Image (cartoon, rainbow, N blue to C red; front, side, top):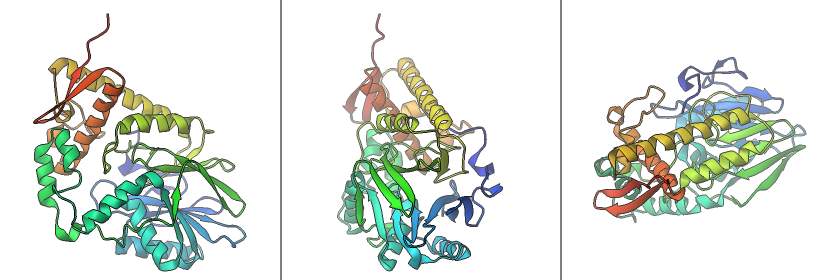
Length: 364
């Protein structure tokens, strides 16, 4: 779901410019937002947040690290220098989740400069799978093949497998295990600032947000994005009921004070409560649409149902999406259908074409 303003047009209030504009933008005294470029057509940047200890003794804490590509590393170095710091001042990275645009530059710089890297413990199976892939130990092609085929997207799975090149295998340097595993809820003291690490599974099983209650800030990662909704189901190994976990995590964030959103992608936004309400409503509407598709069509795979839904803010059809986004759409639709099963509104059965879902009978 998108908000009223597209990510591509969004101006961030801390900079007065497009949210991805180069710079170290002061969000509040002692905290800067640094957008780093991403090598993809969709999202143009990731926001890395730099927290300074006013007394200087605790160095820098970075929320997320960016993608380990030369252009991002060079820009991060330049922006840190613009606020009188450098890589050697980084004491720790608090990484919201395992995806490479958040984790890989953090672990590379952490290894080089002795900074601690913290990551949610439920991401460990994903890291282990990436290490196995990097060693060439995985069979069956792309690690997403199984979930794509279970979604009825065998053609997409085959295309993803064919598109994988040896040079694209995970580099263990980029995916080193963290120094600190986040387990349950934790608190980090950064000088006089206290940051609460709150476990918010859904987008990935080990996703965390970081709340600075005193200053009214939510470092939201990909959990609460102000202009788009995060992908659901795009994680390995696959998790049962990721959408149910995501929505429960949204409710958990809603129980926190209303905080200013510092997202990983998009502009700084005013109200976590307002955006959480929008995201929950979006997914409830999406569940209604999925159930209506099942009632209309009868037994269907996720891909069939995805064909009845609109995608992106332009409501594109499934067939209009490129192969990557078709795969994402198939997995996200499967997450919605799985939640319908959990709620007792649909049933599922395995078939040669993937998991087939059927609407449960309407109660009298």
